[in-house]
Image 1 (cartoon, rainbow, N blue to C red):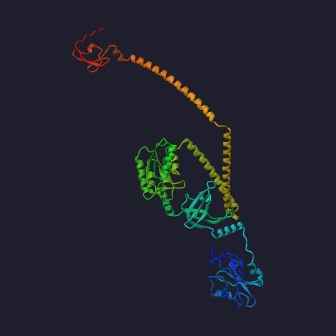
Image 2 (image 1 turned 45 degrees about the vertical axis):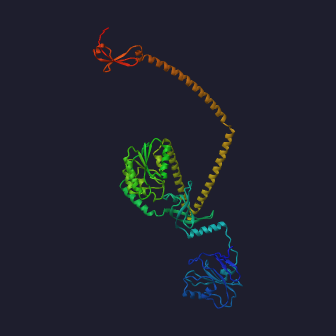
Image 3 (image 1 turned 135 degrees about the horizontal axis):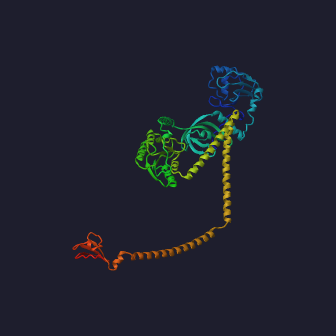
Length: 580
């Protein structure tokens, strides 16, 4: 251990003669925390005045003490000199009283002391104090763990009822079952656990994430079951988003007044587009997600990526240029404009008025897919269709019958959850109204924490049960035998059938080949070239006309004679007409 002198715990008095310590309970004094409660031996002498008592004790006088207050201290009924031997002076900040007691007897004199401006007070008898010198040497109070946690919780909730806290989110853990948010809030020096319950979390218009700097409002409390000190938040907003939010609302109201958000203006999205354009960053994760979804679900269309920046000062201009290039292309059925998630500053390019008007002016239907599901931009309102994420936009343009069935099932489940949520909220509200006089919110919060713990235990039990059933299934499968024999038999049968098929195929092919050869022989015998082989010739005029009559030529004309092999050019010497 170090050689430093250990500090006395708060509220413990020091006796200079005997070294005994006595516990003093009491709240902190408003001026400068708790003043020192001291007990010190004072030699008998003249009647003690204010300056004598201050010099003899370790207590600090209130800052407001003046000469007028000193006169009031002189009027206090302190014992006269010689009547008491050793006297101890005790100033208790809790009882706001001064007691002087004799070390050899139980007699004591007490005077009321008001913190701040000192007032006159009546002396109390020894029976009213009950022997403070004797009590100062009693055993210290021993707390149980539950009592200590309850006392700490009461002090935290009383002193820090509602506060605003700024910090960076870390270890963000939303509970999918209950809808509550569990996270930590930290800065460069420390961190604190925080929780936001479902009812308040649903009112937050953005999705918190690790590393995001936020401003929360809530109450500091302590969960008695685990002794965990945390803040229960009821409001959350991003730091620095106020001005941007005002710009967003102003532009939104302007465009809405112009009718750009009107559903009648928006066009329907084709169910099975042939050419799909993606207006996004070519290096971001969003374009890869959309291409993966389209490759998996919809291979009948052509995908065209039009690259542009989606973040920064140059992003609005590049997005507008990309939309202009898109509209110059032909046969584009639908276009997806978007990017992945981020802060409000990262998504601000899609809140630009130029981008909004370019989307409105586009002849091609536009699907806006900016950020996450909770992110909303001006582009979402003016686009023909808004998708919660880029992947969801890719799914919207690649719908199928199975997808529609799944969507109906999801909507049915969402409706059930919404009805259950409304009923649960109504039940909580009724409970709050019935038990309003005793403020059931603290009990309800602890019950919710307990339910989360029980839900986790139930999930672990279900996993263990599933593993046990899986092991049992494997054992039963082993008892049924190895199916390799049946596979071998089926493979042998398949080989035999394949051999028969190949044999039949060869015989049929030979038969068909013989029939074709015979047909070719017959056709060959009927060919005109075979007639020429028997000594005949084909005679044509110089113009290429076949000659059938001697009257078709005159003496001296040239004629062409086609033989079986080669041809001749001859000149007519004489003609004879045979009418038979």
